[in-house]
Amino acid sequence: MNALAPYKRLTIKIGSALLVDGKTGKLRADWLRSLAADIAALKANGTSVVIVSSGAIALGRRLLHLDAVSLPLEQSQAAASAGQIALSQAWAETLGEHGIVTGQILITPNITEERRYFLNARTTIATLLSLGAVPIINENDSVATAEIRYGDNDRLSARVASMIEADCLVLLSDIDGLYTAPPGKDPDAVHLAHVPEITPEIEAMAGGAASHLSRGGMTTKIEAGKIATKAGTAMIIAKGTENHPLKALTEGGRHTLFAPFQSRAAARKRWIMGTLTVAGALHVDAGAARALLTGKSLLPIGVTKVTGVFGRGDAVAILDPEGHEVARGLASLQSDEAQLVRGKKSQSVIELLGVGNRSEMVHRDNMVLLTGMEAAAK
Ligand code: GLU
Image (cartoon, rainbow, N blue to C red):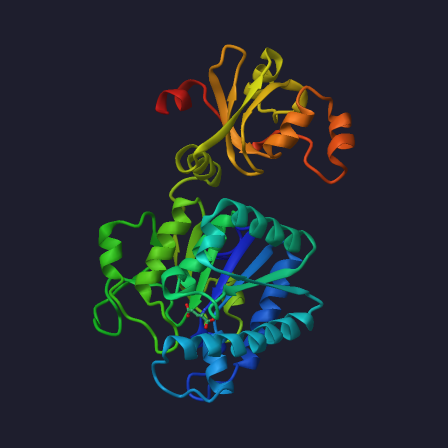
């Protein structure tokens, strides 16, 4: 069975132990070439691919002759700095052989947590994908401080996958999935092919094992699984050490699939309703209030009044002529722009704000209607 067939947008996390030879500290160039061929094949099939690649510290160690088993923070940050150049070069060259352009994005937790950065990073990644490029993402290890780093690319990749609404996160590592106990310690450990839900029992199975190069063991993979599946993204853990690891997955290779906990649309709605504080309100006329109920975006012409100060991407309440909140959503325009264009037709909005700007106030994909069940649950 082709494990990747259901998915159109993949985030693939590559562990250091796959990219870098543990003994020599050198890049596993043949392996990377085989992976690039797999990525090219997926892209040729219309699948978008985002890579979260580890390996900067492991490569930088060799370049800077840092041999200690455990490096002090400043040395591992220096190693990340030197190694990241080698890492992006390797990706650019190897995917370049297939005519694929790569874009590098280095992120820190504030980028996936703070809305303004989040929206920007998401837009950049989406734009790269729409241009046919493959974004290569890593943590910005050389500047992150201990308090503000993920420290492992398992959780980082889960944040990225949920940020870009990937339908599946693939963790390629040195183990072919989750076992009922760490298989190195327990010979009776049994492989699990499918995990419908991450329960405390599943968490207990993860144990704490980590390989010598990567920071994450099964525990951070399960943490990643919780982040991804809650956001509506499936997660696959598969062994990636052999050549053509993605092709292996399309040909029935062994793996563990973690089913998404809820749909991405539901996850997004929960995020809008549950996580964000409302920064302002858009008062709409009766016609616009009715249009929202039929699944339309909110256009400036239907907005009668704008209150509060908000930026693009902030949550706003949408109020009907009686002042009742009928919907909540993410503003496409900041409050001063909204003031300027309220009550105006779309054509004049383009004239006022310039071509290339949003012409709706709130896009329907970013809106939750507060009718019936949703209003009751609020
Ligand atoms: N960001 C680290 C690096 O590129 C890897 C973290 C991990 O192994 O999860 O070296």
